[in-house]
Amino acid sequence: MAKNSLFAILLRSRWWISALIAIIVGAISFALMPEGFRVVGAVSGLPFAVIAVMALRRQWHLPSAARIEQTQQALSAMAWPAFADLLEQAFKRDGYTVQRSKTPAVDFELERQGRRMLVSARRWKSARTGLEALRPLQAARESSEAQDALYIGLGPLSEQAQPFAAEHRIAIWQASELAHALRGLPL
Image 1 (tube, one colour):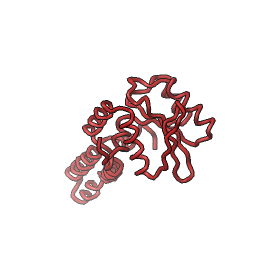
Image 2 (cartoon, rainbow, N blue to C red):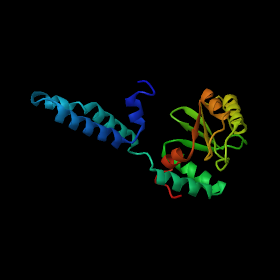
Image 3 (cartoon, rainbow, N blue to C red):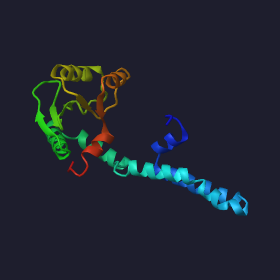
Image 4 (cartoon, helix red, strand yellow):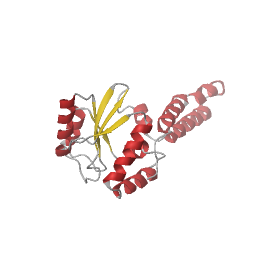
């Protein structure tokens, strides 16, 4: 599906928008079609209803904007030991074996189903994340031959850091991903 097609945009939008479009298209088609074709007109909103269901399924477990804001504020007020313990609980709950790292670029070494991931999270309060935070993580990943790398930070990535993270497949967790990962844990 093309990134900017109508259905792709609707899949990224709130689910109820597609449901509303399905209802409007179906109702207008039903009202304007001749007597024998009204059922066909009413069904014309069906593709939008399918998109609404798909979007709802994707968004079902995602945190609300209020939950994301609450999580960001709570994490911003935490000290490193409390934040590290919280992350460790979340990783263990998700099935990872967690090992705290002693290297400066990596805070956690995770393993699940034979895949290793290095996590850098100590600079989670930084206002902006630049290459100076991502390069050491990538270097540690290459030297340890870990398959995955994850950087955790509440601030946005700099213009130079975004393509670097994408090129080197470094996953980035910000407030929304943290709100989802820390669901159910006391902040």
